[in-house]
Image 1: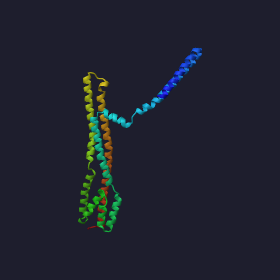
Image 2: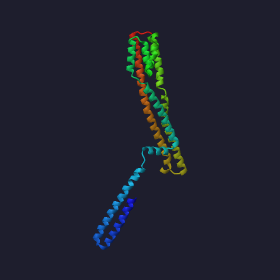
Image 3: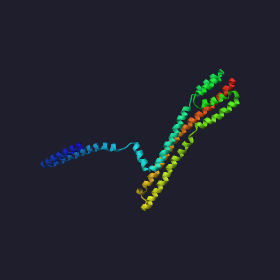
Image 4: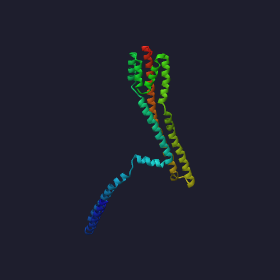
Amino acid sequence: MKKLFAILAVMGVMTFGLTQSVMAQDDVTTTDSTAVVEDSTAVAEEVVETEETPIVEEETGGIHKELKTKFIEGDASFMSLVAIALVIGLAFCIERIIYLSLAEVNTKKLMAQVEAALAKGDVEGAKTVCRNTRGPVASICYQGLMRIDEGVDVVERAVVSYGGVQAGYLEKGCSWITLFIAMAPSLGFLGTVIGMVMAFDDIQRAGDISPTVVAGGMKVALITTIFGIVVALILQVFYNYILSKIEALTGDMEDSSITLLDLIMKYNLKK
């Protein structure tokens, strides 16, 4: 502002001096001085716009501020339900991802250690290897080795049965994720319907159909739908990633089970 006042003061002095020169000079000089005044005014306006530009940029918010604004415009009551669905769904997704990540082991290394122990006839050593290894693959192998003295058929049934139990553990909580995937857009559509009802109520009260009358209800309808679909897409991506990890672990379980049975038949082991 100080710069602005200084520029205006200089402009005043220049204008006064140029006015005196206009009175003393002829018409040609008057034209030249007027051009100088116009140029000076243009420069002053550019300086003022340059100083005001940062103020406009400072008032512009980021993405988080825009999301907050849209959240409030979409009616906080419905948007809160969509946000809760997102938070709880992500909590289940993170829990499953951590569990499945801890369940992953180097299956080839594990089966190589089991084979080395069985090759020596050390069934207890193979059990110890499986007992000290985390994950469903080691658990299945341990259950099979526990019944090695009862024959291959009994070992196979034990492995298959316990494999089903471990598969259930891997898929635990996935049904809740699918629930919130379905709930998020449903809550958005609910906000859409209610927003349309609000729009028709506004039309009825106003007795006229105009953009300004229906804008509020339509905004609630559209924003809640958008947020619900976005939440469903986010949870769907996590859910597909979880399914891929479950499929990989299930494949390792089946492969290790077949390998264990082959090793027992190969070395013809009995406790």
